[in-house]
Length: 501
Ligand SMILES: [Fe+2]
Ligand SMILES: [Fe+2]
Image 1 (cartoon, rainbow, N blue to C red):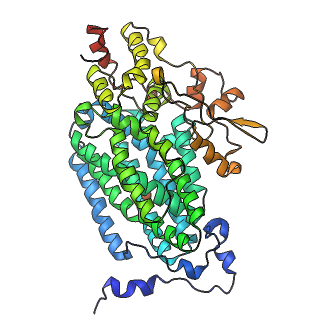
Image 2: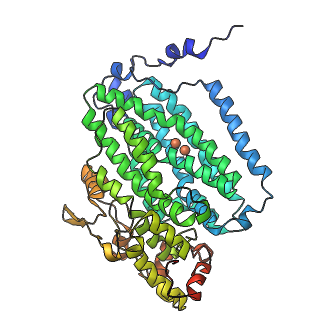
Image 3: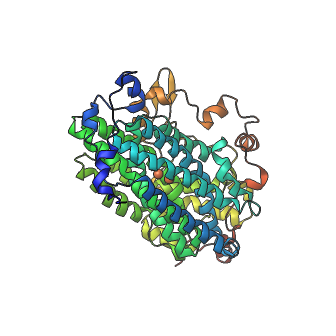
């Protein structure tokens, strides 16, 4: 039997469009689910996916990938990494699993929407594989942390986080619900695969995999690179969709979707990846600062892909790039200070050597963020631990659900960006967050932030105990300092040396 080469049959076989006779075209692909923006089906048939594969090829490769990841895990099961790794690295694992495992599951639903309602046959093919990919990613990232649950129940948050009202989980769900679950097929192709995956996760997973290898966590490294190879394939769904929209006079609409996708993804990336890279990663293993990473990948690579498609940079580009200097430092202060409210143990990351590194990478750090850490350090050294814990919540952004914060100390620029809408005042962290809200206020207007809920009496008692109960954080799950404050010893020896001379 002769077997045809894929290239000989693929183009014919993928043309699975037909003319419906029992229902109308609009009933088969309702605009609310497809989001074709009036571009007709024959135009969508021009969609040309850059990565072509067949089901047998896909299954064969995926089987090998799964076998690889699981066998590395099994082979290293007895190694003592969990006991010997720096606690900052363990915290990265916990925040990653809780923040992402069920996000992958949501991404599977998003891919499923493109599989059913995508207007182009090639998109539906790609998304079918993407859907299977995301299912695999969910399974892997629920299974791998499970072995640690018996030793440390914070790992249980891989499953638990999305089912709680914990604040970081709310912020993550907000983004996932908005960009992955609550959109039509074309918006998902652009916001999830093009903006979120090409712009952020694909690069992050590359970085994370090499960081894991660097600290000797080969299990996590192989898990992440196994996932990343899938991402780099299905992230290509969005590019050709943008090309079809641009070719059919929908450039402005396409840009608007890209800009919303980037803005939505950036906040979450900033709060999870920024502190992981610049504070939780042990100093000896840091290759790039978060800012350098963002400049290289997001500015160097992603900006290029926007320009190559003929898209203008977002109106907020300069503002977003300016945030590379400070926003994640502000989030880190919040993560550490509100540590009982998160499911991992944040590393402070402010030993004298680490402060020198921060000052070198972010000139002026000691005069701004360092001023806040000075107070925290003084309290820790003096044993006034009660002063290092929160008593209530910070003001939250009604878009990102993250604290409204910016630069403290001598560079103070913290500001609320309010908006009156239908009799309610909303608060935003930046012009970008406010612009997001204004794009479709009806999507966001009824949501109450944790602070709104606290003020409305939904959290009882309205103190930190009531807040932890509301967030479903059990005593053994509360975050605390990753290194049990050992980093403060350097300041106990010489309390006046805030930075190595
Ligand atoms: Fe994924
Ligand atoms: Fe993905």
